[in-house]
Amino acid sequence: MNKRRAFLIKSAFGAAGMALVPSWLNGAPAIIKRYNKPDSKINGVQIGCITYSFRSLPDQSAEATLKYVTDCGINAIELMGGPAESFAGMPESNLDRRRMYQLGGKQRSGETLTAEEAKEFGSLQEEAAAYGTEVAKWRNQVDFKKFEQLRKMYKDAGVSIYAFKPSAFGKSNSDAEIAYGMKAAKALGASHVTLEHPSDDAHTLKLGKMGERYNMAVAYHGHEQQTFTFWDTALAQSPRNALNFDAGHYIAAGHTDIMALLEKQHSRILSMHTKDRQTPANGKGNLPWGTGDTPIVEILQMMRQNKYKFPASIELEHQIPEGSDAIKEVQQCLEYCKSALV
Image 1 (tube, one colour):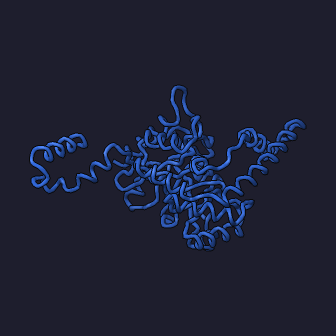
Image 2: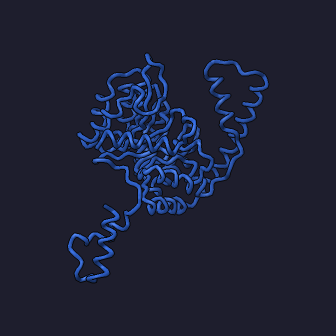
């Protein structure tokens, strides 16, 4: 259809001139502007993607991330902090975060670190703290025009940014860093920032009030600690507090009332991470879409039927099969959504 319209537009202008262009071609500039750009809004349901899904790919720059998104056919995203902040000039770090998270996870699970591991973990923590101080200094003097430039670059490619997730909203971050994160999100065109729920009522109150001050919503993400009432306190604290719901984790936590939760909180859900996880009885695994227990089809159809406005963000967390990659897997997730909604 796009090719046919392009041919007719060219023919109409060339043969008859502007005065004879038929009325249906009045929107030709808009048609041309949208040509060959991604579109993942399906029958009123916005399918998006969190750029964390592309973490396995080597180039994590803003430019490469944009190409990953458009190659997948996605037109709206939750943007992780890394690509945007590196684009804006944030100091680089040689910190081996993967190793630090590995050792930290081992310690949190109750395992005892060896003396050598404990020493290594301590050094990594010191390095991370020093880098955090450097980043905080940079954030306090950043030029937000760089974020506006990134927004334009993405918009020109047909991609909007509905959420921003930098590591600026934790309990260890200063008020200045929190303000920076909200200002950067606004410059990017995001309606909300996202973070892991801090499990601290005082902090959700603080973030909600700062969201009111900077006109930015704060959406809290949950893992398997999510329950039907998990967000109630934060939501009561401020109209700027909201949900960054995770449908897959909710199922892995063993809950059977996900549809009721969506119905109750749909007006306060600003984005929803979507993945296919198993129930506890089936092992809690992250699986290719359509093989787990998350009722993705039913959720998407409910969103369509009830005209819910929040995007369903594809979050790639299942193991990437041999011979595939993150882009191919996200493409398959999008096709799954299309088959559910057409």
